[in-house]
Amino acid sequence: MTDAELQALVRQVLWAAFGLGVMFGAIAQRTHYCSMGALADVVGFGDWSRLRMWALAGGVAMLGFNAMVAVGWVKAGSTIYAGPALTWLSQLVGGLMFGFGMVLASGCGAKTLVRVGAGNLKSLVVLCVLGLTAFMTLRGLTAVWRAGALDTVRWVLPVGQDLPSLAAYAFGGTAAQHAPWLGGLAGAALLAWALRRPDGRSRDVLLGGLGTGTLVVALWWVSGRLGHVLEHPLTLEEAYAATQSGRMESFSFVAPSAHLIDWLVFYSDNSKALTLGVAVVLGVVVGSAAIALGSGNFRWEGFAGVEDTANHLIGAALMGIGGITAGGCTIGQGLSGASTLSLGSFIAVAGIVAGAWLALRWQLRRMARSA
Image: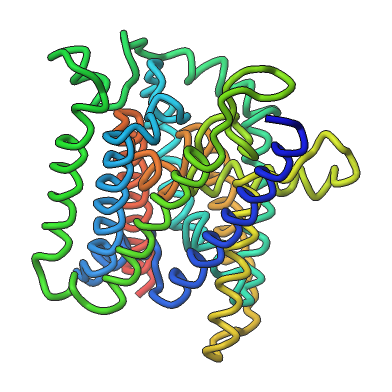
């Protein structure tokens, strides 16, 4: 592949990622897709419909990703989620921080972007703080603390931490042979639970769940199949075009928010290239804005007061630090990572759910005392 051909491929991948981001933002705005909202509905009202939407998306993502593994299009080991080093303490603690923070900030990273597109100025502030603290945890002050403390606690497995690779190691065969039945069982179980009740079969739940899950799979294909370069013209090594990590990537919103700030601040620096994650972030805002404007739901919204401001600032910081420490957010770990059947992703999701539950219970107790 020549350098000109590589640049053309990069543009293809970026436009495809932007388009998928637009569709994600449009679907999330239309269906009120929100992982934090799903948990809040269950804790506060006993309404499971949006949690079924999240489960439906996860099931579709698992089925789609592992089907691609089975036919040899992608490999879990080519993602950031399925390496042999299981940093379980970082994923658990980071998940707890992110889950608690997203409740204080009124939504996870994805919902923050969707609200920015709909005119929510609170969410714009949350996005800036989330991106800044995420960047600090990637390369700055909190990165030193993370790498020197939590990340040192790890289990190094003999193979990748995705279940198909572990099954191949334990029982023989290859990960590609185990992926369809493991992914099929896990995905089918989530779909069955999501669809077993009428509230899981409503139009919005089906659109949000099936649509979001399909988009996760589509972006895996874009980065892992379309953007796969067997031999980079400069390094002569395998590469994935336009990805920040140099590996396959799908939807995730914490690290890309940091990379968006980095790209905007150092735009004139030729070494700062637009990446797939940043293109997705921009696409989500555009897609949400299009639906909000078209439906008459676009409106400016600011903070209600000092306490509201403080909650959102603290929540945004917890999401930025926690999301990087955990390796992803409710979408990055909860859908993209979980679709690879990674042990670390399951630990991170458990931490996120536990952190959100704690924050929701704390808020309910505060409301009860005030009443």
